[in-house]
Length: 123
Length: 127
Image (cartoon, rainbow over all chains, first blue to last red; front, top):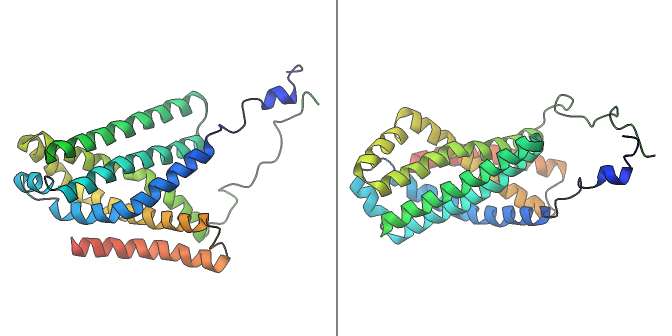
């Protein structure tokens, strides 16, 4: 430790250089979700509980399908950014890396599943 | 200079020191609701996948999502969604540099809490 200089100790502990972009991404997706969430709640809510044929026909229509696809895609990306901040606040080291990678993979997977499902229902 | 003691210095006051206030509680709830929405979001995503797969798989997923347990999760998710949305709006407002006066912040806090409950009940009534 005697050879550890203050400069060396500080190296690599600074900004990750992408905080501004992360903040901006969260801002943009939050504005989009403020519009999408009410549209989704009031299109998804009434059809939940309906029989299969009705659900399939309903999500064959452009408006509910596009709203649902956008909400799931943007929502999962917003989730990805938000959970990353949670993980960074409470963990470090390998745990942090593993949790962040897991969150990113889950978010992309869920978004892909949602969009695929809606495209398939619509076509 | 090269070997400063960094291990035994005072830490900033943390959760165990601060008295809970409306602002801190509403802030923590924003984080909790946002992250907890993973449960409802996964359920809804799964429901869509099942609907896209076919009637049999849909019957399985739909039975789970509309069961009492699914209903409970979705009801709590609905509140979490409205809460997180209103708290997000408050953040967007704060981001413009406004609304930091103590009495304004207090009002905004109660608006987020009250608004989320009101919107949840309204949504349940409408749907």
